[in-house]
Structures are given as structure tokens and as C-alpha cells.
Amino acid sequence: MTTECCGTTSPEAAAPAQLLPLARPTTGCCSTTPEPAPQNTSCCATAEPVQETSCCATGADEEGEPAAVTTGLSLEEATKVVGPGLPLATEPSPYLLPGWLKATEASLDNARAWHSVADRGEQETALLPGFVFDADPIVDADPRTYLGWQPASGTVACCSATTSCCDGAVDEVEALGADAFFPSLLLGSPLGYRSETAASVADPLLVADLIDRIVPSALESGIRSVVVPWLHEGEHSEVLSLALQAYGGHVAFHGESHYLDLQHADYDAYLAALPSRKRRRISQDRARAAASGARVERLDREEIRPLAGRIAELINQNRQKYGGGEDEAHIGALLGALLDDGADVRAYLAFKDDRLAAAVVAVRQGRRLFVKWAGFDYEILGERSGLYFELVFDRPVRDSFEEGLAVIEAGPGADEAKRLRGFRPRQVRSAILLADEALRPAAARLHAAYGEAQRQALGAGEEEVAGVVGRLRARLRGDSAYEPVLPVQPEGGCCG
Image (tube, rainbow, N blue to C red; front, side):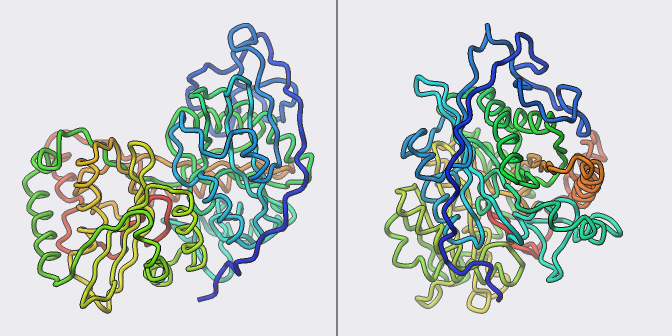
């Protein structure tokens, strides 16, 4: 496998630009709980960059002065503002932990930290991670990917449901030239597959303050495109997308991420609430796992470290088989960073004849469990062992109920297996902004076509049908007698 990381440390980021806060207008165009804006318009009815006001401000008298925002920071500089830990008021994923971001920069070729922080005083701070790529990043971090482009190698982005959104998209994007996109600024955690902020207060206006300075600062420093690939549903993501649209960016559908809301009293109550046919399937899967002859164990935190190399190898085998942006070096570095950070990592492992043959890695953050990676050696286990379901779903669900967790984040893909167990999808959107205003209409058109192709391929946004037809559709979903062709897309992971 051709790796996309040589393990070298990227050049240090340029010295940060300290930018003064901008005065807010006495009236604002957006409410504090914004409604989604049309994709081709901004919330302020202008596609031009707004450098003197905050698009989503609600008035200085109501909200006070905007936060002081500093952009282009290294991780060390950013943590001096927000502190060595991670602000948790916005319930960020573990993929914004300092160790994770440090390992991302170290293991991704050509990645240069370009983090931004907002500081409103009185310990009200926010962090929005960013990475600059001068050319040819991994496909998931490439802004051209979200316009329907593919590299000559044929590599596709994480969980892309379509290889090309429309005839001629690759040629049209190529014709724009690399200079239209690079250097590119990615906002988010590129190996965590999340574009989100971590803040000490749950105030979406901090996100607007960040974007109000990030976009002008990025363009002034020579950035040719800003891409925000993984906007998960939520109030803060909505404000981020609105603010980007106000500067001329375009937002479109990208995919779905699945979650399980743990509303029941315990695992038995959860299981009893499922339809009888689903309970039978789960019982059959568990029986197959029990008959596999494998020994299943859970290891936590430092117990995992001695096996980290083999775990990364197993996960990488799935990446090679099914495709993905991470390689063994990325996985090993990120797993090590989580352990070094003291994160609540647990690994569900299956041993066959004392050989580690399967591994699922999950991370607890607050009252949420993120299923991140899965790897199986099917030469040892066979294709129909039932251990896939046992390790990826059943063990984490049982443990989450016992620990009193609220949600399991299981990521995209494997829709049937997840529906069978009561998981529900949430939309993920992407946003892109080109510095060249003349190219923005073409980029918006290609981005919209890519998003619609993704939506149609996934069957997302289908209207729920009541009555007999609705029951029939529900029965047909997730009723395969076999394991899915592709393994689960763990939260934040890609294609296996």
C-alpha cells in the first residue's frame, strides 16, 4: 500500500496574526438560533466578504463586544489561550484533544497547524482547529474532492457514496487549476472527520466571531480555498455554515452519521423495545459469535498499549481492503496520542487460538461513546463469525448502558446493521469557499451536484411513509441474513 504519511513533522506554522475585534452593528441579520439559509445565498443577502461587522451579531447592547480572535496559531499557542485541556461546554468529540491534533500534524504529510481561538474574557474561550495544505493532501482533506473530483489513483473520500457526481466533473475541476485551491485551509480535525469547535461556554456567537476573523485573515495570508468537510447537525455547526455563506461560501449535503440515543433503563429494556424480528437477528448474531471459538475481552487505557501495534495493523488491513484515508502510521500515532492524553479509550478484542484477530476501538467523552476504528483478520476468523456485530455494536451498547452513557456515536456507513439495532442517522454537510470570486459560481454548482449525488446514493432525506407501505419499507431495511459487505464505518473513521 502506498502510504500517505512518512511520519515527518510538518514545518512550523507562521507567526500568528493578532487581529483586533471588530465593532458589531446595532442590529443583526441572524437570530441567536439561526434557521438554515438557502445554500446559494448568505444570511446577510450578500456574497461579498463582510470584514467590518459580524454577520450573526444580535447587537452590542444585547451581546456585548465580540471576542478577540487570533488566527494562524500553532497548537502550543492555541492552548495558551484555551488551556491545556479541552473546553467541553459544546460537547466536542475527542478528536479535538491536544494530543490528537498534535499527532495529526505530525503524521499527515504537508499539514501545517493553523488553529484559531476566540477569547471574550472571564474564561469564555473557543477553539476551532485548522490545517493548511500547500498541495495534494489526503483525498478527504482535498477541497476538490467536494466538487466531485477524484485523483488519478481513484482513491475516494471517506464514505463517499459515489465516485463522481456528474459527467465531466473531474475534467472541469482539473481545468480550474490547482492554484484555484491551494494553499487550502481545512477547518476541523482531518483524521477525526469532524469540523467543530470546542468552547468553554455554549454560545454559538463565539463561532460567528471566529469565522468573522478566520476568513479575512486566511485570504489575506494567501489561502486560496477554505473547506469545512464535516459539519454535523447542531446549533454551532449551523452558525458556522451561515457565517461561511455570508462570506460567499457554499454549503451542501455530504453524508450521514449514525447515533443511538440510550433512552432505556438498561440493555434488557432496550432490547425488549426492538421489534421481535430484530431481536431474533441479534440473538442469531450473538449465537454465531459464541460458536466462533474466539475469546472476547475488553481492555482499557494503558492496558491497550502493549497491543497497539497489532491493533493498528488490523485496522489498516481493513483500510487496504475497503479503502480509506488513514494508514497504519496515522492510526498508530493517533491511538498513542489518545493514550498519552489519558483519554477514556477502550478496545474490544477477539482472540482466536491466542492470536489477536479483531479489534474495535472506542473513546468515551463525557456521556458519549465514539466508536472510532474496527479491524478484522478474516483469514483467521472467517467471513461469517458473527464477531463483527458482537464487537462493534453489542458489547459497546451493553457497556454504555451499564456506565450510564447517553449516546453512542457510530459514524457513517453500515446502515442496515445500525438500523437493526435502533441507530438513527443525522446529516453531515460540507462547506467550501474559494478566494477567487469569479470561480465561486462554478464551485457552488459542482458542490451542489456532488451533494445531491451523495444524497441520492444514500437515500437520505426520504420521506417517512406511514401505514402499510411504511411498515413494509421498515421491514425491508436491515433484514439481510448476512453481515454487510462493507464493515461498519466507525465514528470519525473511514471505510472499515
